[in-house]
Image 1: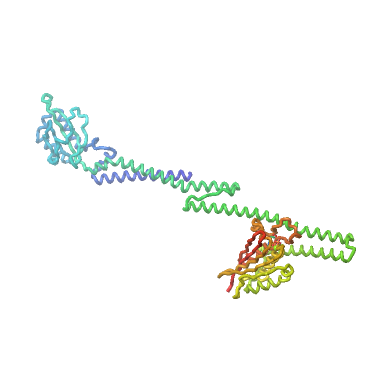
Image 2: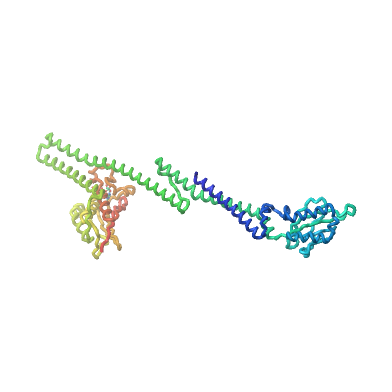
Length: 488
Ligand SMILES: Nc1ncnc2c1ncn2[C@@H]1O[C@H](COP(=O)(O)OP(=O)(O)OP(=O)(O)O)[C@@H](O)[C@H]1O
Ligand SMILES: [Mg+2]
């Protein structure tokens, strides 16, 4: 059974049960008000006019009617009328007899009622013998019979058996069917609206979820779900969509890794093949006797040595990077005084700076000792990689490197800025990827390097819990900055 059908069923049963309960309670109420158990019989009758009298009253009325038909003169006998009235009184009814336009007899209990004006017209065919009438605020139901006292004189007469009713009970009885109808309509309408609301709020989102799940099953992870509400169902939809998004991202990442892996193998092969080919060429030269002089031999051997060293360096870098990447390289953190550490590292590079006529400027160096938590060797490696890049890519004088230190309560930001050629905007997001080089030919002679320097720097800084970022402007220079945690 579908949820939709179940809901419809439950709403319908709520409506039916409510109507039954309403009818029952209305009946009990009407019994309580009128004290008349037989009112059940009258329950569905719109008007007293159908049953104005009780059975006993009706039988007395029939007796009177019989007299009117067969011996009408008897109805002028006041004693007889009195007797009938007494009988009727037992039943809480009363007798009224009319002769022509005047009242011959009216029960004493009705003495205050102005009957000549309120009684209906004569209707000698007796088409309507049961009806109701109002006298001021009082309300009566009656049965009446019109007759001639004698066919010659055409003297007209009427007998009325009248029963006073409570107007409240009357109103209830009159209104009850309308009320029940109205109640049922309101209930139905409410049920329908509720059903629509629940369908919209629950069934529709569930339907959406099912469709999305089907898309996922078929491998389509781009199908987006939008939560229409913030309630539990909306939250479920939202969480489901987040799950889809994560799944999508992780698959994309997987594909990206796969692509990276392929790229890595291709890069390694390329970067290793070039020096190997060169080494092979020089070795063949030696074997074939090209190096016929000492000088030539030395040149060949030293070229082989250089290429082998390049290869060694590349393999070492790669190994180091992969250890960092796999989190297999342990960090030994210690408290470092930053200024001294930076001055020392720059000092180690001073020969290279001097050879390439590079000016080093210091900016914002703290006057008080500033301590950071760092792995000395690894942090030095980061700085050397950054200085290396500056030296390698700055291609025209004046060459200038700025080292700036900024700090707040928790972090220190170190920025190494050069005035070299800069990095194209579209390349900036990629320079921290392994093997990525802006100059795509992978021709190491243009500006030697395997594209691992910044990738290693990023791994190390992230290992310190910091962040590294680059900003650059073509033709103006490049700035690489990274954060470290302060210690006090
Ligand atoms: N200061 C800089 N000025 C201009 N370009 C830079 C600078 N620093 C990095 N780059 C660009 O970013 C790329 C990646 O730098 P990275 O240090 O990772 O590799 P690499 O220098 O080519 O090789 P490696 O550092 O492994 O010898 C470089 O190839 C270069 O194109
Ligand atoms: Mg580099």
